[in-house]
Amino acid sequence: MDTAYALGPQAALGDTEREILAFERQWWKYGGAKETAIRELFGMSATRYYQVLNSLIDTEAALATDPMLVKRLRRMRDARQRERSGRRLTPSS
Image (tube, rainbow, N blue to C red; front, side, top):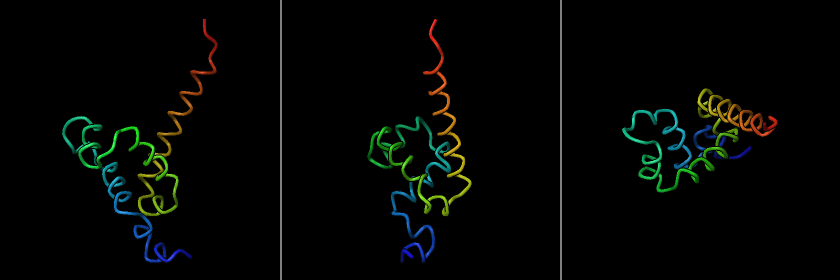
């Protein structure tokens, strides 16, 4: 078993990963656009942030740390992917 994970699920995550989960849990509390807060807090573009977030929510450590948040984010991602797939499959007029 991974030593860091044996200490608890949060120990298996890095500081930035824990901060990203915390931000996703309450980003609406930050005034202004989410993209601006992402750049200010994490020093990365929104595109890079979402790449990191999508990888993060696929990990067992993130799921163990905040199961409700991670499951909600996974459902939202899956719904967006299904919507995009549905648009591609519809015949054009």
